[in-house]
Length: 229
Length: 177
Image (cartoon, rainbow over all chains, first blue to last red; front, side, top):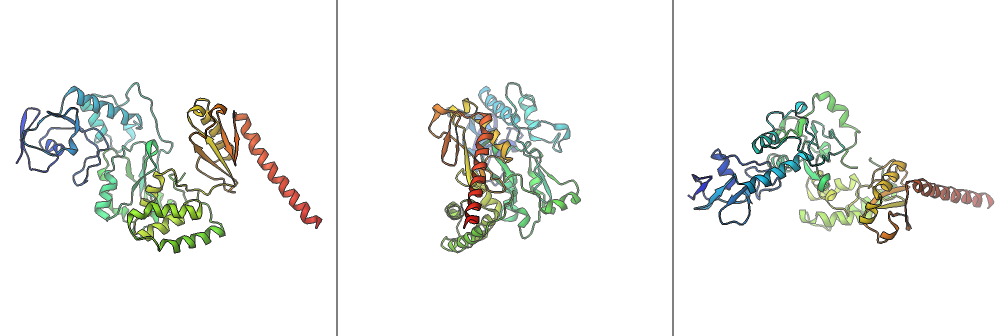
């Protein structure tokens, strides 16, 4: 069992566990969005979970590092915090900050990180770039809010875990990247109605159940997928 | 924007279905298959995406996700008069995006789409190699340099008039015979 130091605290953990998981298990919070046990290899897309390890030239993402004997880890150095703050500010610059009307209010991972890193939810100095489509209603049971999504990919992963294949996917690229449900209406068994794993895993409330099922009915036919444009 | 397939396209789709047999049912074949479909049909209609998904036994959304990532795949049929608005550096500086927006507004479609009558399609391109003429748009094969918003309407009008004249000439020919 490797023994090592995190913020001057001695920690023991099983060989083969990632540093991020060990820290979180030991009540050392490292901001993270896309990490989920079981995503192998980790997606490393949020660029939040940086730490400094003695011997490494620059901060590294803790979700990709496995614990080793005699590691000396610091989670709270100026360099790490600067990277995290910048990453969070960039995320918030493409986020529709409207916490009052958001279902994730108070359990939102972005709020938690902003508080932890002392970053305002409306960061100054950066432009705000929002997507045109506020709500994607193409799914028969779900609504998707592209301007809340942080594109962590957890929903895609859990859907695949549970149903063998994922009914959600990333589509397009760059700034235009969104989660898409293309073709979900034609699936042989749209079990989404009672599943909800994607909603539960979403750290920011970008996925929500349609408010009434009545609303879902007219959507079943005809209305076009705004993603196709 | 779900456009009906033309009879020729339905025929081509059958052709695609028979060609699919040559590809093994493996995910790594997805992109070659999509390229083959686009070569045959000139774009990826929803029907074709469904066909490909069924062949590889994956969900349609996965096919869609891969296809939307790459610029080489298009989801709308090419129009009879393709319009390419240049957004390269020089054209960008001289307001290429305004020209693009003008075309979009005038035709009522977004970049990457085709008008319902399949006359026009708009595409964004990055540099066509004549930056001195910026901003540039290409309609059919003709390069139009020093574009201005006021020119957009004229260019579209000219194509319509040409089309009308052609039709009239045709009618005349027919009645003359």
